[in-house]
Amino acid sequence: MEENYPIKRIIDDHGHFVDSTFENEIDEKLVKELYYHMLRVRTFDRKAINLQRQGRLGTYAPFEGQEAAQVGSALALQPDDWVFPTYRDHGATITFGKSMTRTFLYWNGRVEGCVAPPDRNIFPPAVPIATQLPHAAGAAWAEKLKGTQNASIAYFGDGATSEGDFHEGINFASVFKVPVVFFNQNNGYAISVPIEKQMNSKTVAQKAVAYGIPGVRIDGNDCFAVYFETKQAFNHARAGHGPTLIEAVTWRKGAHTTADDPSKYRPETQGKDIVDPMTRLELFMKNYGYWDEQWIEEVKEKTANEIDLAVEEMEKYPASNVEDVFDHVFAEMPPQLAEQKESYLAHLERR
Image (tube, rainbow, N blue to C red; front, side, top):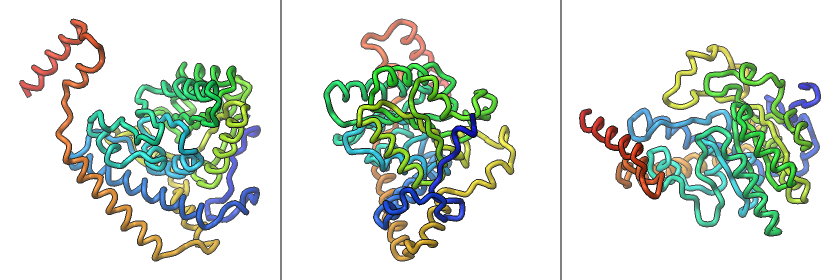
């Protein structure tokens, strides 16, 4: 089946065209937009890790290495579309319009971190694996019933394909031909479990066959391949033809979260031969005359200032209240939850 789903790419590891299909659509505006957002979210990601190590942010899920997959797909969205992210897709949500301040607040346990801008449809990050896929299908179905051209995208990792929600969400979307793109970032590991140990299929894309929908496999580190294939999937959806399953083959450079140690389960040399998506885009820019040193420095300075301001705004908020975890689950707290709350608060006092 792997031969039936070759990895589509537009540029190679050295930044040269290998597919000219969309060459005429790649101009300075698109190149700079992709680079700007990829640099912006990578800088955010590295800052968040530093803040966590300093005790200024809670446990954090880094995404370095997956910038092309997240930015390329997010830029293919229309303003009124719906985004259903996981806990690792803040690169996509920030690109789509979520503020950095609220993203930092999310990782500091504040409920404000789940609030999207009023002009964007962004669901709170899904921590339970794959639960966002049926939600994305439902939102897309609602848009179809209303007769709009709006679509939704569901982000998920390779581990999510082993969950029932994955199959239920895609099956529903397929049956009702709803406008949704299922965007899988196959980064090789479901936490510490390599993909070959959590599924027998050679690809994620081939799973589309069971539901009678298109399955596409792309180089997730090629921002152009991601952007154009996602855009085509949205065009397919908006035309009333239903969902597409995209498998973006990428690589998680760091740990699953800041509480994880990948050296315990990942060989040290694994992934060393994978060309970083930022490096690949930079090589492309230099090869084809888009590299502008002055503009790059301006973007770096602008991004650094934006992130510093977001950190400053985040730290003006009071610390999160642990009681919120208990108080906002039920309208009337059941006895067993009240007991858990009392026990935990007593534990904190003893500490």
